[in-house]
Length: 258
Image (tube, rainbow, N blue to C red; front, side, top):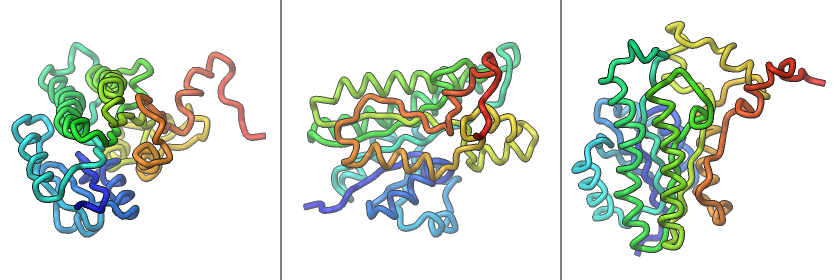
């Protein structure tokens, strides 16, 4: 009989996913990373701690279903799912945003999230227990010039609420976090290339700073824990206060420190 907590993390090789791997390994979970083989290495495995790895493209329904069956056969039932696999988008106006890129973003960020929830979550519901945390975004709530990423993440927020209602009476909780501007490897690369300005990203927040990946992982860990056992169907911002302050220019700006 399984006596450990089994946590599956998609996109666990980098960014918020990798931070979640570290968090749940430290918590004592048995952690399984689903990501592309090209994203994984011995060095990365050593840095993240003891976690099993399965090569899995979250867009591929056949592969996701096969991996879910392999995990269950080898490790037993999955207790927690974190759907962190996703890609970012450069700011492009609709006249120059290639449909191929729009499709790639929505296929990974939305289709991949739904597919993993449908496959793993259905197994949880059949057993009568489980918890899922999806990764939405502050762009789920506000207009942005990210015309693929923003709608995909808004759909993830809607999906989260729908699945929470679908499976609540089957013992499965489904929540999401909505990170603000987070200093992942991808964000740091965008800053280094001059695509993003860290000052512009920090200034509209109440706390005047970026979010760190480990801070998002802590929020995810809370939503998966027994401390959140009565919480389902929410999208929890982890944004250093961007959502509460991003409109305050109309009122003279964010107040300074007292």
